Length: 432
Image 1: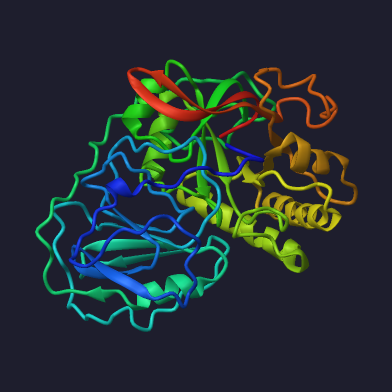
Image 2: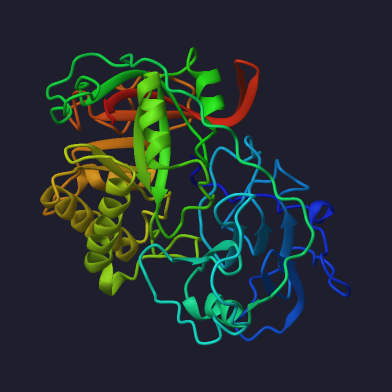
Protein backbone atom coordinates (compact mmCIF):
# COMPACT_ATOMS: atom_id res chain seq x y z
CA UNK A 1 0.00 0.00 0.00
CA UNK A 2 1.07 3.55 -0.58
CA UNK A 3 0.08 6.67 1.31
CA UNK A 4 0.90 10.35 1.28
CA UNK A 5 2.66 10.22 -2.06
CA UNK A 6 1.34 11.03 -5.47
CA UNK A 7 1.13 8.20 -7.97
CA UNK A 8 3.85 8.84 -10.47
CA UNK A 9 4.15 7.86 -14.09
CA UNK A 10 1.47 6.92 -16.58
CA UNK A 11 1.22 3.90 -18.84
CA UNK A 12 3.56 4.37 -21.75
CA UNK A 13 2.00 4.65 -25.17
CA UNK A 14 4.53 2.34 -26.78
CA UNK A 15 2.37 -0.67 -25.95
CA UNK A 16 -0.93 1.05 -26.73
CA UNK A 17 -1.85 -0.57 -30.05
CA UNK A 18 -4.23 1.11 -32.53
CA UNK A 19 -6.78 -1.44 -33.72
CA UNK A 20 -8.52 0.43 -36.51
CA UNK A 21 -7.43 2.87 -39.14
CA UNK A 22 -7.42 6.43 -38.02
CA UNK A 23 -7.01 5.73 -34.31
CA UNK A 24 -3.82 6.67 -32.53
CA UNK A 25 -3.19 6.34 -28.79
CA UNK A 26 -3.11 9.72 -27.14
CA UNK A 27 -0.50 10.85 -24.65
CA UNK A 28 -1.70 10.81 -21.05
CA UNK A 29 -3.66 13.92 -20.24
CA UNK A 30 -6.28 15.33 -17.91
CA UNK A 31 -9.45 13.41 -17.18
CA UNK A 32 -11.83 13.44 -20.14
CA UNK A 33 -15.11 15.22 -19.48
CA UNK A 34 -18.38 13.45 -20.25
CA UNK A 35 -18.88 15.84 -23.19
CA UNK A 36 -15.46 15.13 -24.73
CA UNK A 37 -15.66 13.92 -28.36
CA UNK A 38 -14.99 10.27 -29.13
CA UNK A 39 -11.92 9.95 -31.31
CA UNK A 40 -11.88 6.41 -32.69
CA UNK A 41 -13.19 2.88 -32.37
CA UNK A 42 -11.60 -0.43 -31.37
CA UNK A 43 -12.98 -3.87 -32.19
CA UNK A 44 -12.73 -6.88 -29.93
CA UNK A 45 -14.64 -10.10 -30.46
CA UNK A 46 -18.26 -9.08 -30.99
CA UNK A 47 -18.09 -5.44 -29.87
CA UNK A 48 -16.93 -2.14 -31.31
CA UNK A 49 -16.07 0.35 -28.60
CA UNK A 50 -15.60 4.11 -28.98
CA UNK A 51 -12.36 5.53 -27.62
CA UNK A 52 -12.81 8.85 -25.77
CA UNK A 53 -10.20 11.53 -26.38
CA UNK A 54 -7.04 11.03 -24.36
CA UNK A 55 -7.66 7.37 -23.53
CA UNK A 56 -5.08 4.62 -24.11
CA UNK A 57 -5.87 1.22 -25.63
CA UNK A 58 -3.99 -1.91 -24.55
CA UNK A 59 -4.18 -5.35 -26.17
CA UNK A 60 -3.39 -7.83 -23.44
CA UNK A 61 -2.74 -10.70 -25.87
CA UNK A 62 0.16 -8.64 -27.26
CA UNK A 63 1.18 -7.21 -23.89
CA UNK A 64 0.40 -9.94 -21.33
CA UNK A 65 2.47 -8.31 -18.58
CA UNK A 66 0.28 -5.18 -18.68
CA UNK A 67 -1.53 -4.50 -15.39
CA UNK A 68 -5.24 -3.72 -15.78
CA UNK A 69 -5.57 -0.51 -13.82
CA UNK A 70 -8.66 1.53 -13.05
CA UNK A 71 -6.86 4.68 -11.87
CA UNK A 72 -6.31 6.03 -15.41
CA UNK A 73 -8.30 6.44 -18.60
CA UNK A 74 -7.73 3.31 -20.66
CA UNK A 75 -9.42 0.44 -22.49
CA UNK A 76 -7.95 -3.04 -21.91
CA UNK A 77 -8.80 -5.81 -24.37
CA UNK A 78 -8.42 -9.49 -23.54
CA UNK A 79 -7.29 -11.50 -20.55
CA UNK A 80 -4.08 -10.56 -18.73
CA UNK A 81 -1.16 -12.96 -18.52
CA UNK A 82 -0.52 -15.02 -15.40
CA UNK A 83 1.96 -12.49 -13.98
CA UNK A 84 0.93 -8.91 -14.81
CA UNK A 85 3.44 -6.28 -13.73
CA UNK A 86 1.31 -4.42 -11.21
CA UNK A 87 2.71 -1.93 -8.69
CA UNK A 88 2.53 -2.80 -5.02
CA UNK A 89 -0.48 -0.58 -4.71
CA UNK A 90 -2.75 1.53 -6.89
CA UNK A 91 -5.46 3.69 -5.35
CA UNK A 92 -8.10 5.81 -6.98
CA UNK A 93 -10.73 4.88 -9.55
CA UNK A 94 -11.65 6.81 -12.69
CA UNK A 95 -13.34 6.04 -16.01
CA UNK A 96 -11.86 2.89 -17.57
CA UNK A 97 -12.98 -0.25 -19.42
CA UNK A 98 -11.78 -3.83 -19.37
CA UNK A 99 -13.23 -6.11 -22.05
CA UNK A 100 -12.36 -9.77 -21.58
CA UNK A 101 -13.42 -13.03 -23.21
CA UNK A 102 -16.58 -14.55 -21.77
CA UNK A 103 -16.21 -18.27 -21.19
CA UNK A 104 -12.63 -18.65 -22.47
CA UNK A 105 -11.04 -18.82 -25.90
CA UNK A 106 -13.34 -21.57 -27.19
CA UNK A 107 -16.58 -19.80 -26.26
CA UNK A 108 -19.13 -19.37 -29.04
CA UNK A 109 -21.58 -16.57 -29.61
CA UNK A 110 -24.98 -17.19 -28.02
CA UNK A 111 -28.19 -15.31 -28.63
CA UNK A 112 -29.31 -12.95 -31.33
CA UNK A 113 -27.14 -9.92 -32.04
CA UNK A 114 -28.73 -6.53 -31.68
CA UNK A 115 -26.22 -3.85 -32.55
CA UNK A 116 -27.76 -1.16 -30.32
CA UNK A 117 -28.34 -3.36 -27.27
CA UNK A 118 -26.47 -0.90 -25.01
CA UNK A 119 -27.90 2.25 -26.58
CA UNK A 120 -30.22 2.89 -23.62
CA UNK A 121 -28.15 1.27 -20.91
CA UNK A 122 -28.16 3.16 -17.61
CA UNK A 123 -25.19 3.03 -15.26
CA UNK A 124 -26.51 3.22 -11.72
CA UNK A 125 -24.46 5.05 -9.11
CA UNK A 126 -23.16 2.48 -6.62
CA UNK A 127 -20.71 2.48 -3.76
CA UNK A 128 -18.32 0.34 -5.82
CA UNK A 129 -18.29 2.81 -8.78
CA UNK A 130 -18.25 -0.20 -11.08
CA UNK A 131 -20.46 -1.74 -13.76
CA UNK A 132 -20.03 -5.31 -14.99
CA UNK A 133 -21.91 -6.58 -18.05
CA UNK A 134 -21.92 -10.07 -19.54
CA UNK A 135 -22.67 -10.01 -23.28
CA UNK A 136 -22.82 -13.66 -24.45
CA UNK A 137 -23.90 -12.65 -27.96
CA UNK A 138 -20.64 -10.70 -28.25
CA UNK A 139 -18.52 -13.23 -26.38
CA UNK A 140 -17.28 -10.68 -23.83
CA UNK A 141 -17.66 -9.37 -20.32
CA UNK A 142 -17.25 -5.61 -19.91
CA UNK A 143 -16.10 -4.15 -16.60
CA UNK A 144 -16.39 -0.39 -16.44
CA UNK A 145 -15.41 1.99 -13.65
CA UNK A 146 -15.99 5.67 -12.99
CA UNK A 147 -14.68 8.35 -10.68
CA UNK A 148 -17.34 10.80 -9.54
CA UNK A 149 -20.12 10.65 -12.13
CA UNK A 150 -21.43 7.47 -13.80
CA UNK A 151 -22.54 9.56 -16.80
CA UNK A 152 -19.04 9.46 -18.31
CA UNK A 153 -18.98 5.66 -18.28
CA UNK A 154 -22.60 5.48 -19.41
CA UNK A 155 -21.87 7.59 -22.48
CA UNK A 156 -19.12 5.25 -23.67
CA UNK A 157 -21.22 2.13 -23.04
CA UNK A 158 -24.22 3.57 -24.87
CA UNK A 159 -22.02 4.22 -27.91
CA UNK A 160 -20.69 0.63 -27.89
CA UNK A 161 -22.10 -1.54 -30.69
CA UNK A 162 -22.40 -5.30 -31.04
CA UNK A 163 -21.27 -6.84 -34.33
CA UNK A 164 -22.27 -9.95 -36.27
CA UNK A 165 -18.70 -11.08 -36.94
CA UNK A 166 -15.65 -11.37 -34.71
CA UNK A 167 -12.24 -10.10 -35.77
CA UNK A 168 -9.68 -12.83 -36.49
CA UNK A 169 -7.50 -12.34 -33.44
CA UNK A 170 -5.65 -14.52 -30.95
CA UNK A 171 -7.22 -14.89 -27.54
CA UNK A 172 -4.94 -15.72 -24.58
CA UNK A 173 -5.70 -18.88 -22.69
CA UNK A 174 -6.07 -18.83 -18.94
CA UNK A 175 -3.52 -20.35 -16.63
CA UNK A 176 -4.29 -24.01 -15.72
CA UNK A 177 -5.85 -24.55 -12.36
CA UNK A 178 -3.39 -26.05 -9.91
CA UNK A 179 -4.25 -28.64 -7.31
CA UNK A 180 -4.34 -27.23 -3.78
CA UNK A 181 -1.68 -28.21 -1.29
CA UNK A 182 -2.36 -29.65 2.17
CA UNK A 183 -3.41 -27.10 4.77
CA UNK A 184 -0.86 -25.69 7.18
CA UNK A 185 -1.10 -22.96 9.79
CA UNK A 186 0.81 -19.68 9.56
CA UNK A 187 -0.21 -18.16 12.88
CA UNK A 188 -0.27 -18.91 16.56
CA UNK A 189 -3.33 -19.87 18.57
CA UNK A 190 -5.72 -16.95 18.98
CA UNK A 191 -8.52 -16.06 21.33
CA UNK A 192 -11.28 -17.43 19.08
CA UNK A 193 -11.24 -19.76 16.06
CA UNK A 194 -12.94 -19.44 12.69
CA UNK A 195 -16.46 -20.79 12.49
CA UNK A 196 -16.69 -24.54 12.94
CA UNK A 197 -16.03 -26.33 9.63
CA UNK A 198 -18.51 -28.62 7.96
CA UNK A 199 -17.66 -32.23 7.28
CA UNK A 200 -14.73 -32.49 4.87
CA UNK A 201 -13.48 -28.92 5.44
CA UNK A 202 -10.14 -28.01 6.98
CA UNK A 203 -9.91 -27.56 10.76
CA UNK A 204 -10.62 -24.09 12.21
CA UNK A 205 -7.71 -21.67 12.37
CA UNK A 206 -7.01 -19.01 15.00
CA UNK A 207 -8.50 -15.66 14.06
CA UNK A 208 -5.15 -13.88 14.26
CA UNK A 209 -1.68 -14.55 12.95
CA UNK A 210 1.82 -13.26 13.55
CA UNK A 211 4.68 -13.08 11.10
CA UNK A 212 5.67 -11.46 7.82
CA UNK A 213 3.08 -10.55 5.21
CA UNK A 214 2.99 -8.89 1.80
CA UNK A 215 0.40 -6.88 -0.06
CA UNK A 216 0.10 -6.28 -3.78
CA UNK A 217 -2.36 -4.47 -6.04
CA UNK A 218 -3.74 -7.55 -7.83
CA UNK A 219 -4.04 -11.04 -6.37
CA UNK A 220 -1.27 -13.12 -7.98
CA UNK A 221 -1.84 -16.34 -9.90
CA UNK A 222 -2.02 -19.57 -7.91
CA UNK A 223 1.39 -20.60 -9.28
CA UNK A 224 2.92 -17.38 -7.95
CA UNK A 225 1.34 -17.85 -4.54
CA UNK A 226 2.80 -21.36 -4.49
CA UNK A 227 6.25 -20.04 -5.43
CA UNK A 228 6.12 -17.45 -2.62
CA UNK A 229 4.75 -19.78 0.04
CA UNK A 230 8.12 -20.62 1.60
CA UNK A 231 8.82 -16.92 2.13
CA UNK A 232 5.37 -15.78 3.30
CA UNK A 233 2.27 -17.12 4.99
CA UNK A 234 0.17 -13.92 5.05
CA UNK A 235 -1.08 -11.87 2.10
CA UNK A 236 -3.54 -9.07 1.44
CA UNK A 237 -6.44 -9.19 -1.03
CA UNK A 238 -8.43 -6.20 -2.30
CA UNK A 239 -12.02 -7.38 -2.46
CA UNK A 240 -13.61 -4.22 -3.91
CA UNK A 241 -14.42 -0.55 -3.48
CA UNK A 242 -14.73 2.67 -5.46
CA UNK A 243 -10.99 3.41 -5.22
CA UNK A 244 -9.66 -0.08 -5.92
CA UNK A 245 -7.16 0.61 -8.66
CA UNK A 246 -6.41 -2.83 -10.15
CA UNK A 247 -8.57 -5.47 -11.77
CA UNK A 248 -8.66 -8.82 -10.00
CA UNK A 249 -8.82 -11.55 -12.66
CA UNK A 250 -7.42 -14.18 -10.27
CA UNK A 251 -9.47 -13.33 -7.21
CA UNK A 252 -12.28 -15.87 -7.07
CA UNK A 253 -13.86 -18.07 -4.45
CA UNK A 254 -11.75 -20.98 -5.74
CA UNK A 255 -8.55 -18.89 -5.50
CA UNK A 256 -9.29 -18.00 -1.88
CA UNK A 257 -9.96 -21.63 -1.00
CA UNK A 258 -6.83 -22.84 -2.80
CA UNK A 259 -4.35 -20.40 -1.24
CA UNK A 260 -5.84 -20.95 2.21
CA UNK A 261 -5.22 -24.66 1.79
CA UNK A 262 -1.61 -23.80 0.95
CA UNK A 263 -1.42 -22.32 4.44
CA UNK A 264 -1.88 -18.63 3.63
CA UNK A 265 -3.78 -16.32 5.94
CA UNK A 266 -5.48 -13.42 4.17
CA UNK A 267 -6.12 -9.74 4.96
CA UNK A 268 -9.38 -8.87 3.12
CA UNK A 269 -9.40 -5.14 2.32
CA UNK A 270 -12.02 -2.85 0.81
CA UNK A 271 -10.75 0.31 -0.91
CA UNK A 272 -13.74 2.64 -0.89
CA UNK A 273 -14.36 6.38 -0.90
CA UNK A 274 -11.45 8.47 0.33
CA UNK A 275 -11.22 11.53 2.56
CA UNK A 276 -12.96 14.69 1.29
CA UNK A 277 -9.62 16.57 1.43
CA UNK A 278 -7.67 13.86 -0.43
CA UNK A 279 -6.45 13.99 -4.03
CA UNK A 280 -8.61 11.08 -5.19
CA UNK A 281 -11.69 11.42 -7.42
CA UNK A 282 -13.86 9.05 -5.39
CA UNK A 283 -14.30 10.92 -2.11
CA UNK A 284 -16.53 10.90 0.94
CA UNK A 285 -19.25 13.54 0.96
CA UNK A 286 -19.12 15.24 4.33
CA UNK A 287 -22.90 15.64 4.59
CA UNK A 288 -23.49 11.95 3.74
CA UNK A 289 -20.43 10.40 5.39
CA UNK A 290 -22.37 8.16 7.76
CA UNK A 291 -24.65 6.77 5.04
CA UNK A 292 -21.71 6.22 2.72
CA UNK A 293 -19.82 4.32 5.41
CA UNK A 294 -22.80 2.03 5.93
CA UNK A 295 -23.12 1.48 2.17
CA UNK A 296 -19.44 0.57 1.95
CA UNK A 297 -19.83 -2.00 4.72
CA UNK A 298 -22.84 -3.59 3.02
CA UNK A 299 -20.97 -3.87 -0.27
CA UNK A 300 -17.87 -5.25 1.45
CA UNK A 301 -19.97 -7.95 3.15
CA UNK A 302 -21.55 -8.93 -0.19
CA UNK A 303 -18.15 -9.24 -1.82
CA UNK A 304 -16.69 -11.14 1.11
CA UNK A 305 -19.50 -13.66 1.02
CA UNK A 306 -19.08 -14.08 -2.75
CA UNK A 307 -15.45 -15.01 -2.11
CA UNK A 308 -16.41 -17.48 0.60
CA UNK A 309 -15.17 -15.33 3.49
CA UNK A 310 -17.57 -16.14 6.33
CA UNK A 311 -18.78 -14.17 9.33
CA UNK A 312 -16.46 -13.52 12.26
CA UNK A 313 -13.66 -12.70 9.82
CA UNK A 314 -11.97 -9.29 9.46
CA UNK A 315 -12.69 -6.78 6.70
CA UNK A 316 -10.37 -3.76 6.58
CA UNK A 317 -11.34 -0.41 5.09
CA UNK A 318 -8.45 1.35 3.34
CA UNK A 319 -8.50 5.10 4.01
CA UNK A 320 -5.40 6.71 2.52
CA UNK A 321 -3.49 9.54 4.16
CA UNK A 322 -5.19 12.92 4.41
CA UNK A 323 -4.70 16.38 5.94
CA UNK A 324 -5.50 16.08 9.63
CA UNK A 325 -5.22 19.85 9.90
CA UNK A 326 -8.57 20.05 8.11
CA UNK A 327 -11.00 19.47 10.99
CA UNK A 328 -14.06 19.11 8.78
CA UNK A 329 -12.27 16.51 6.69
CA UNK A 330 -11.20 14.51 9.73
CA UNK A 331 -14.72 14.63 11.17
CA UNK A 332 -16.17 13.30 7.92
CA UNK A 333 -13.67 10.42 7.88
CA UNK A 334 -14.47 9.54 11.51
CA UNK A 335 -18.22 9.60 10.80
CA UNK A 336 -17.68 7.35 7.79
CA UNK A 337 -15.52 4.86 9.72
CA UNK A 338 -17.94 4.89 12.67
CA UNK A 339 -20.72 3.69 10.34
CA UNK A 340 -18.39 1.21 8.63
CA UNK A 341 -17.54 -0.32 12.00
CA UNK A 342 -21.08 -0.36 13.34
CA UNK A 343 -22.51 -1.92 10.18
CA UNK A 344 -19.87 -4.65 10.02
CA UNK A 345 -20.43 -5.55 13.66
CA UNK A 346 -24.14 -5.85 12.97
CA UNK A 347 -23.35 -8.18 10.06
CA UNK A 348 -21.08 -10.21 12.41
CA UNK A 349 -17.85 -9.38 10.61
CA UNK A 350 -14.79 -8.02 12.40
CA UNK A 351 -14.27 -4.34 11.44
CA UNK A 352 -10.75 -3.21 10.63
CA UNK A 353 -9.20 -0.03 9.24
CA UNK A 354 -6.01 0.56 7.28
CA UNK A 355 -4.53 4.06 7.22
CA UNK A 356 -1.34 5.99 7.76
CA UNK A 357 -0.16 6.30 11.33
CA UNK A 358 -0.08 10.10 11.00
CA UNK A 359 -3.68 10.53 9.80
CA UNK A 360 -6.46 7.95 10.00
CA UNK A 361 -4.98 5.81 12.76
CA UNK A 362 -4.09 8.78 14.93
CA UNK A 363 -7.54 10.30 14.45
CA UNK A 364 -9.21 6.99 15.34
CA UNK A 365 -7.11 6.59 18.46
CA UNK A 366 -7.96 10.06 19.73
CA UNK A 367 -11.60 10.13 18.64
CA UNK A 368 -14.41 10.20 21.16
CA UNK A 369 -18.05 9.31 20.69
CA UNK A 370 -17.54 6.84 17.82
CA UNK A 371 -17.46 3.06 17.54
CA UNK A 372 -13.86 2.13 16.93
CA UNK A 373 -12.68 -0.77 14.77
CA UNK A 374 -11.62 -4.03 16.36
CA UNK A 375 -8.34 -4.16 14.42
CA UNK A 376 -6.00 -1.73 12.69
CA UNK A 377 -3.43 -1.89 9.92
CA UNK A 378 -1.15 1.12 10.04
CA UNK A 379 1.37 2.40 7.52
CA UNK A 380 4.64 3.64 8.99
CA UNK A 381 7.54 3.16 6.61
CA UNK A 382 10.42 3.25 9.08
CA UNK A 383 11.77 -0.19 8.17
CA UNK A 384 11.19 -1.45 11.71
CA UNK A 385 9.16 -4.63 12.06
CA UNK A 386 8.15 -3.89 15.67
CA UNK A 387 4.36 -3.74 15.82
CA UNK A 388 4.39 -2.19 19.31
CA UNK A 389 6.61 0.47 20.92
CA UNK A 390 5.68 2.76 18.04
CA UNK A 391 5.78 6.57 18.47
CA UNK A 392 2.31 8.19 18.42
CA UNK A 393 0.62 4.78 18.79
CA UNK A 394 0.27 3.94 22.49
CA UNK A 395 0.52 0.23 23.25
CA UNK A 396 -2.87 0.32 24.95
CA UNK A 397 -4.49 1.12 21.59
CA UNK A 398 -5.58 -2.14 19.93
CA UNK A 399 -3.60 -4.75 21.89
CA UNK A 400 -3.01 -7.66 21.58
CA UNK A 401 -3.25 -9.47 18.20
CA UNK A 402 -5.10 -6.55 16.64
CA UNK A 403 -2.32 -4.77 14.79
CA UNK A 404 -0.65 -5.02 11.41
CA UNK A 405 2.20 -2.68 10.53
CA UNK A 406 3.16 -1.82 6.98
CA UNK A 407 6.80 -0.96 7.52
CA UNK A 408 8.07 -0.73 3.93
CA UNK A 409 6.50 0.60 0.74
CA UNK A 410 6.61 -0.69 -2.81
CA UNK A 411 9.72 -2.68 -3.75
CA UNK A 412 10.55 -5.80 -5.74
CA UNK A 413 11.18 -9.19 -4.19
CA UNK A 414 11.92 -12.53 -5.83
CA UNK A 415 10.93 -15.88 -4.34
CA UNK A 416 10.71 -19.25 -6.04
CA UNK A 417 11.92 -17.65 -9.26
CA UNK A 418 9.02 -15.15 -9.36
CA UNK A 419 9.43 -11.38 -8.89
CA UNK A 420 6.64 -9.16 -7.54
CA UNK A 421 6.35 -5.53 -6.52
CA UNK A 422 5.03 -5.61 -2.96
CA UNK A 423 4.72 -3.74 0.32
CA UNK A 424 6.05 -5.40 3.48
CA UNK A 425 4.09 -5.94 6.68
CA UNK A 426 4.70 -7.18 10.19
CA UNK A 427 1.58 -8.93 11.45
CA UNK A 428 0.22 -9.50 14.93
CA UNK A 429 -3.39 -9.03 14.01
CA UNK A 430 -6.71 -10.26 12.74
CA UNK A 431 -6.63 -12.22 9.51
CA UNK A 432 -8.80 -14.72 7.65
